[in-house]
Image (cartoon, rainbow, N blue to C red):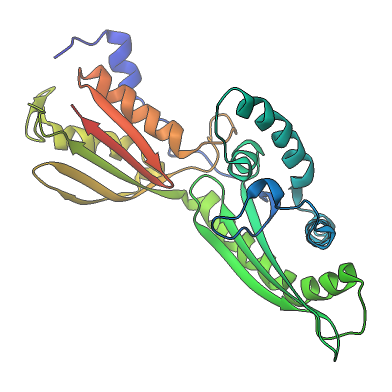
Length: 290
């Protein structure tokens, strides 16, 4: 096992963020994106569909009227399209919509599914809104609004009617969930696995303690407000099914995401002299000890 410097020991002993820091209630930054069917060509989400552009703009305007900070999806989308053309010419494949969401700076993206329903008895729109947290993909709120039938082809007005039917309930539910995340932290799952060739077990002593106990001490110090739950420690796996991390770093006010927490744990394991690989799927952080 590697010897740690005095400075290294001090750093590892410090929690990632102060557990006593107060977190102010903040409103999320929101981006409205179009609903995408599985297998649909994301490059053509908006091309040739003026009604969808109108719908997105109308929904965003309603968020702006209620003092939410919004991100212009259309501008971000066009910029990412140009960047992806260069990337594709170099042989790189990219998911434009995913990249737009990740690079937007938004806390929440709202997926808008707009169904146009022409009829001899009047045209109508059904709007389905679903809010997702950007960093974890967890659903926060959903709502359905229906415009009612009217003899008009002005889909912006029909969209506005559909939005008005559901927007207040939707935003209230979304804000309530977001405020809860700000106050209590967001949940991530942590899986620590042992590779089949690893000579390390969870009983291997480090700093005088079995590895599993040392890891629990680390989570106790670094989970937000000491809030974590160990599902179990098995022969080849340790699973924490609910570890809280903050939305914002209380010390800096900057965004704090699952990748930053994952990096902190990776650095801790490396300081112990443990070789580890890591990956992330949504809100699940996975580590494999070699």
